[in-house]
Length: 356
Ligand SMILES: NC(=O)c1ccc[n+]([C@@H]2O[C@H](COP(=O)([O-])OP(=O)(O)OC[C@H]3O[C@@H](n4cnc5c(N)ncnc54)[C@H](OP(=O)(O)O)[C@@H]3O)[C@@H](O)[C@H]2O)c1
Figure 1 (tube, helix red, strand yellow):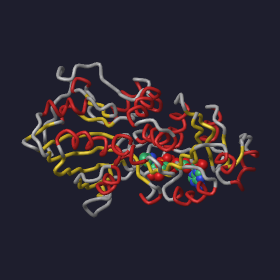
Figure 2 (cartoon, rainbow, N blue to C red; figure 1 turned 90 degrees about the horizontal axis):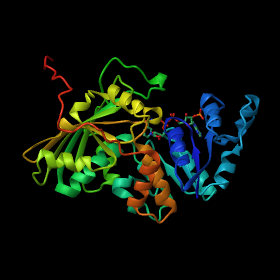
Figure 3 (tube, helix red, strand yellow; figure 1 turned 120 degrees about the horizontal axis):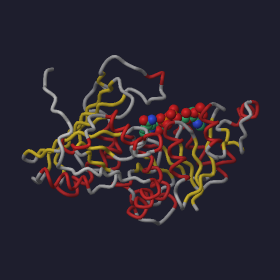
Figure 4 (cartoon, rainbow, N blue to C red; figure 1 turned 30 degrees about the vertical axis):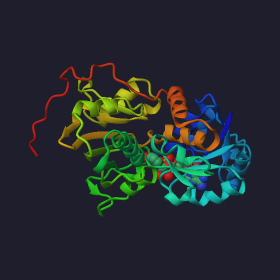
């Protein structure tokens, strides 16, 4: 069993903890909190051992009646690998703490690429992670782009990808981040940092990105245009993406017109927290014109990096191949959403008249 500790139990950390606990070859030793709030209580309810992330604050947990099993140091002494899910910037500060305990560590995409020996995405860079002591799982947007561009590059070659990222303004729990009554270029400079970040896990693919943020919390939306080196048909691209286990192609007949219904569908399907671990590509948006491919996809920012973290743990600590690890992760979590509806039938979505 691979013994895992999760440092930082927020949006990503709680999901990574649940995903680790669901793996047959992993043991979740515990999670950390800086304070005994509702998330600390829910960790206890889930049966997870709780550790004080900041030793000086251990007493606060006792005072609040929240039992702890020790401090971060105790946790790091008991695990084979730590997954750092602390807010952006704190992970970099924690790097020396993990090194002092000789504990391999996985960081998140909010950190700069140089925080770790290698950046990680299971579809594109699993083998590059071999021999590393530390990995950085790339951000939600970068994960989504890498998953999409990798099969296109392998099948047809990517001459140039241009992607506009309409990013959610904040996560649902981030009351301090919104709502904004605007659509804001963010960053205002073009291209954005996302393209170079894709190249940390998918080198050599020419991709330019521009990013905005919008007053929504559910998901990011990507408007994608890829000039391919070959000229596939729309149908073969649909089949290619459909065969990717971490891409869900939404059939037209599903009548899913946006992130709201996507999340509703995920909840109806019994997904924990309504999580969508897969890229969600609108099937009828996939269109090839000459060598130009167009499509829309949505990425659930709270969820898509979660299976990647599980694979990163195996890449750091085992000899399992990428294929074996991804299959194991997908099986344990239930990744690989497929609609029961026929893909080319139905007329569930009414065309919208362009009036703006
Ligand atoms: N949310 C996303 O959309 C998303 C997507 C992909 C990647 N990421 C990346 O994942 C990382 C975590 O983001 P997040 O959204 O999960 O943040 P988050 O929701 O703010 O969770 C981070 C948690 O860490 C805890 N924390 C703060 N200081 C800490 C410390 N010194 N030691 C241990 N825990 C500490 C905080 O809880 P307490 O202080 O209450 O313990 C906080 O809830 C970031 O690098 C982010 O860029 C986020």
